[in-house]
Length: 625
Image (cartoon, rainbow, N blue to C red; front, side, top):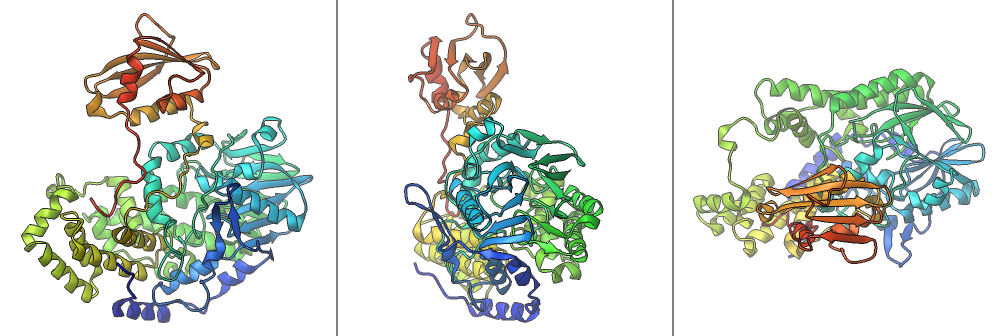
């Protein structure tokens, strides 16, 4: 099945968008280019084994006017995000942009530099540091700041420092309170499912080009190198807290529960510069990211932006963030932060107003309109988040998945309801015929609904599968939102070519190594196959020799419970002694015989426990049954 050109409906819509958008406003391009020092040429980063982990040059096609296969507003955003190189924010503060999904920033101190958010991968962070040093000198890294608990803001830490230097006190690692807990939980507990859906959201496996992936709105895509984590040595706990690193004073503002569960902003008095982490970027952000996450709090988010305006705007000449480009000048800063604040507050307040009038999330999203002033601002457009899915997220935060209609309380799942709809309509061929009519009329949403039922009835039906792929492709061409485009294109690609799998994983050995014993046991409990374990009744003591601590594991009724209690061989079916905490990871993987593990007691207890564990599936199907 081949890709199709954009339909007349899509081309007409883009022509209308092109005439309505304020494309003559080029201030963002001027700001994105401001302070440019030098680019990485070629902008291709490889791992030690020669594998390409980052290729910004693959976006060289983003030139000139938007093709009809890409929404003109998204084309503009992707052109801005694809700019790469070293930039001066103000004298003493430098950013490398376009070397990963996120930015890395360098703050020059008395003897070296403070690094803010070392990207996703060791390789891209090292390349960014080398680019900085090529233009600013071989300054030593004295501190690393993680603004928040997402992998694109800490994963490349080994590219800028080492665990040995941190352990020796040469480098401080600064992060908001509870950073490690949230960083580990997000990437481990539901990490497999999130990573699989992230393959759709970011389009990492899609071809780059006007008919393929053009970016993700927040940046271009994530790098695919080594992800690591060094645990913070300094936890920031309170707003107004001040610290000095390498002669640079920093004033912190806590912002938990916003774009990440652990997040903070901070201000540099010496440079009159404010870093907003990921809470004020040049797009509407997600209140519930399409890859999956906890629903974020737009009310708290807007409140922290108000606090930042009140606390720092009179003292700031520039505001910068961990994505996109800075904003300079007091009036521009206040305008930018105020509109960002109003955007999240409006989404929250107006969704609540309408849900209290009895409208459901999907109904509110269908008619929701942002104020004209927000529509006119480029940085409030939904390139990454969207009004539609953010409104539904607010509804979910307060009301949950159920919309109150009893007919939807116990609906059939897709594989059961699909055949029923197909039969009611008159069979598969009739469904495809109706869907084709909808497609020809440009009603792609209805065509996709019909074809979803058809494919979940018979995924091998060639006509349904081909038309479904063509339909999703047209929806992608029409989307202003980059993550929607990537979802549609990923679905179309898998219908045509088969499962893409999960190209990017963040559950690295380094990250897993930071799990506490409690989190490791939680991870085991998540993987227990309940029905297979219903009849098991096990009690196993697990003792960590390096920390002289014992945990009692019990498996009953398909539930694995752990407690920190003294070992008691008299009541334990088996006792497992592990040399180190890290050895538990190998134990969980089924390795119970290599050095570092001693087992006493019932020889069947461990095999029975391990036999009850499932392995996550990183290649589960999404667009097909």
